[in-house]
Length: 88
Image: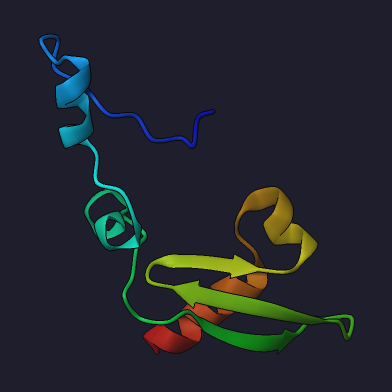
């Protein structure tokens, strides 16, 4: 099963040495996950143009929204507007 992360393993690595290449657990995540943040995620409810309410969450540099646009494009106008408000 792949989770989208690849690690280059030196050619002379044996099975015993393989374990030393990996850090397991949440503490180690900050070393390999570029979107990792120790700050708790921030969530705000945003009202859509047709009256629906969506939850926009920011965790470090990663943004998510519960709208359909985000589900298809991994970005949406709700996130874009919040980013503009934050930047000023």
